[in-house]
Length: 80
Image (cartoon, one colour):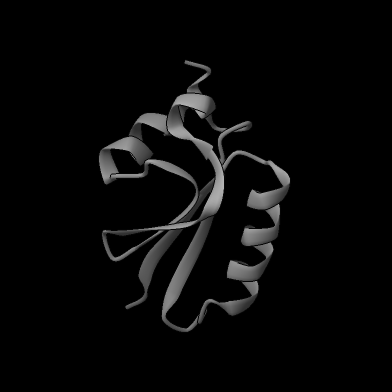
């Protein structure tokens, strides 16, 4: 059974570049990759925060959060 990988981002250039790199690099035989763009899925912000996402872009693998570069803080994403 494959593990789930979720890539969260806000659509900024840093995020889009990271999304492309992650999508090309991740082993699809091991992970089902879901990409969540907060501009299109604002209802998923709380979910990401509960998982420990502090900034985007971020990749969640097997419950572990990996912050990639720095595009925006979650406060920026929420508009706070």
